[in-house]
Length: 150
Image (spheres, helix red, strand yellow):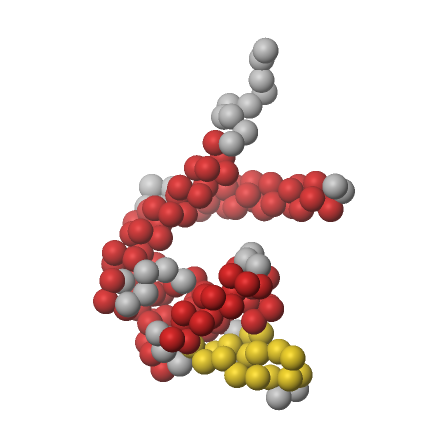
């Protein structure tokens, strides 16, 4: 039977996961002095929202479920990277902000990720990068559509 696929259907998700894991290994190795083996992207996302981000919003932005979010936040609080406080406007919500330690870590993370990103993409044109992101966005939208219709 002939197939229209260049890859088997399971290869693309597996390869994307592999690239993500490999990227995380490189970042973790560069930032080993932070006492943080992962969750770098959580700290960067929290920093972008400057203390206005709720736990529920962060879970949505990071594409993870509530129970995983609680465990990650507990870890980051325990390590001293973030603060979690009850939202005075809505007591059912928790607001998440960076601690001083977290803000210092974000500065190092941003520098490190910029260096790795530049090195990783030094032989790739801006047009190629845009094409990859456009393709990934189309795939994401299509998967969301399929999920809604089931």
